[in-house]
Amino acid sequence: MLGHKTHTDITMLNGVTTATKTTNALGQSTATTIAPLRGLPLTTTDLNSVTSAMRYDGLGRTTAVWGASRPTTQSANAQFSYQISATVPSAVTTKVLNDSVGYVTSTALFDAMLRPIQTQKPTPQGGRLVTNTFYDTRGWVWKTNNPWWDSKSAPNGTLVGVDDAQVPDQNVIAFDGVGRQVLSTSYFQSQVKEQTATAYYGDRTVTVPPTGGVATQTFTDALGRTTETDQYTTSPTVSVSAGSGQAPITTVSITGGSTKAVTSPPSTDKTQGVSYTFDTLGHPAEVTNLASGDVWHTDYDTLGQVTGKKEAACPARPVRPGGA
Image 1 (cartoon, helix red, strand yellow):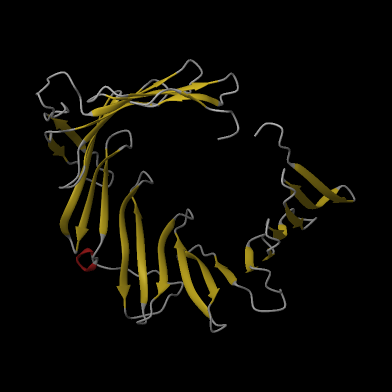
Image 2: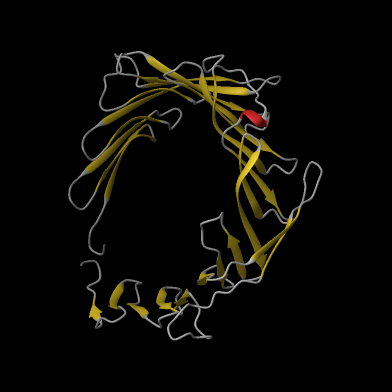
């Protein structure tokens, strides 16, 4: 907001920053103390004077965090350990303090490129809840296993596998030749439950959701801004041509259907959709309901602040910049 200043004080020792304090227009402050040799934050204090403290290992990785002004002489709220390997998946183990002053342990595993491939979390029934992420040869995520229960072990740093037929919630994504998602399929124990299809036609993208959803088409301009969003009143037809191999290319075609609004009396020139226009500076200026013809208009000053609004079926009203 214009005229409201934020001020930052910097504390330095031998030319190195050791602390900062930022004060807003209301006199509220946040503060950070910094390790001078590494530049890493040691403590942070928020607007409510609640302090958090951090500790690091020799590589600058966080090893412990104390939150809610908890003294560092007590057990940390969270602890982190790291296992880096050239032969098995690397792992980060997280221990979070519970109400019994014990720790709840979870693990995240990473492949040789340090991409996340698995998480393991404990459950009240014992065992662990596991998620998996799979990459194709292009490095794109093509399959994810949402949480499934492994009753045989608690979370640890060892990768665990599962057959697709035992996963209750799995998503498989297919891509076109330029890496755009064209088909998303949800499985329950290897059985298809629902699909979402997407087709790209230059400035127009058509999406057909699972049964019960409404198919849409979205238009964008040369700057990637959405200029129109239409809803189908008659469902289009989806055709899929699936590729094969380690990096398959899938082609999706969506044809037919209608986006004409259902009106009384019937009209053939009204679309069930909304259009968006922008002024010369790129501000969203108008929103138009294409079916009803209602228009919402916004005016701006040279600083880009809203100065007036005209809503459909309402008189124009001025807006004071920086206020209600």
